[in-house]
Amino acid sequence: MASVHEAGLHRPLEWDSPLYRTAVAQFDQAVPYADIDPDVAERLRYPERAFIVSCPVRLDDGRRVVFPGYRVQHSSVLGPTKGGIRYDPEVTLGECAALAVWMTWKCALLRLPYGGAKGGVRCSPSKMSQGELERLTRRFTSELLPIIGPKEDIPAPDLATNAQTMAWMMDTYSMQKGHAVPEVVTGKPISIGGSVFRHEATGAGVVMTIARACERLDWKLNEQRCVVQGFGNVGGIASLELIERGATVMAVSDVSGGIYDPGGLDIPTMSAYAAEHGSLDGWATGVRVSNEELLELECDILVLAARENQVTLANAARLQCKLIAEGANGPISLEADAILRERAIPILPDVLTNAGGVTVSYFEWVQDLGRLFWGRDEIRAKLAEKMNDAFDRVWDVSSEKNLTLRTSALVAGIRDVGVALEARGLYP
View 1 (cartoon, one colour):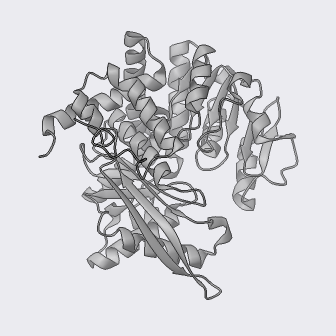
View 2: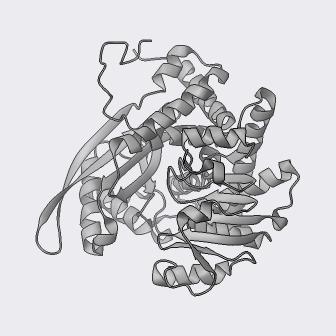
C-alpha cells in the first residue's frame, strides 16, 4: 500500500505535529516486532477520520466568540472509538491525532472492544464561567452529533473537563434523540448512569501497575520513596494510593509549583486542601520547588501525571529516579526515552500505566447498556484483573524479545489491532 506521501501529496498532513510524529515514531519502532502485514501497518499509521468544527458561544458580557473544536477517530477496527475531550488553549488537531493513536493501542492492550479517539476545544477554561462552559459544551456536542454515539464514538473527560461536562454532553445528545442515552459518554455523574470508582480509576490503575512492577523487580512498594508530578485527578489519587500501600510520597506538584519534604508529605490533608482551594497554592509546610526541580529530585519512583513532554533532551540526563510511571499521556519525548533507556531506568509506559480510566469507562458503558450496576469492590477487582493481565503480557513480550516495556506494550496492542484488521480485510 502506498502512503499518502508516496501517492504524490508531499505537503505535511493536516494533523502533522511534533506529538503526532512522536506517536508514529513509536509505532515504527514497535511494528517490526508485531508480525503484521506491511499494508495493515501502513493503514494504522493514519487516523480514519479527523473533524474540525467551529463553536460560536455567547459569553456572559454579551460578546459572541467562535472556538475551534476537534475530534479525531484513529481506528474503529475493534469497535466504537473511545477517548477524552480536553479544553485547553493549546489543543490542536495534531495533538488529538497523536492521543487518538495511543488510545487505540491502550484499548487493544487492555482487550477492550474499542478503538482510539480524542477531541477538544481550544479555549481557556479557567477564564470562563460555569455558564459559558455549559454553552460551549452544548454547542460542541451539537457539532459532533453526526459522529458520536454509543456504537460510534464515546467521549469521556480529559484535561479541564469533568463529570459535569459529560452530563451536559449526555443531556444535549439525549435531547436530540428524545430519550435518555447515558451510554453516549462515560465519566458522568453516578446519578445519571456514571460508575462508582470511575473518578479514582486512572490514579488507582497507575499504582496497580507500579505494584506489579515492584513484584517483578523484587522491590517492596512500602519501602519506595516517590515523587509525583501532578496533583489532579490522576496524580492526587495515585499519591493517596501510594501511601495507602505504605510508600512514602516526598514531593508533589500542581499548577502552583512543587512541595518537597524528604520525610514524607501529609497527602490526605493536602488532597483535602487542594479540593477546597483549587490548588496547593498557599500550602504552608514543606519546601517549595519548581516543577523542573521536582523532576530531578532523588527518589525511587517518579510518577509523571501532569501532561506531555515533561521529560525531554534538556533534563533526561539529570533525573535521579530508579523507575518512572507515566500517569499522563506522552510525558517523555523520544529523545529523552533513548537517554533513559541508555541509563537503564525502566519506564512503565502510558498506554499501560494510565489505562485504568478507559477500563472503568468500559465498565461504565457496559453497565449503562445493560442497566445493571456493580459495586465499588467488584469494579476495583475487575480493574486489577485487567491491569495485571496487561502488565504480565507486556512483561513477557519484553523478556521474550528483549524490548523496552514501552515498545513491548505497543507491540502487544498493535498486534491485536493488526490481526483484527487482517481478519476484516482492507475495504474495498
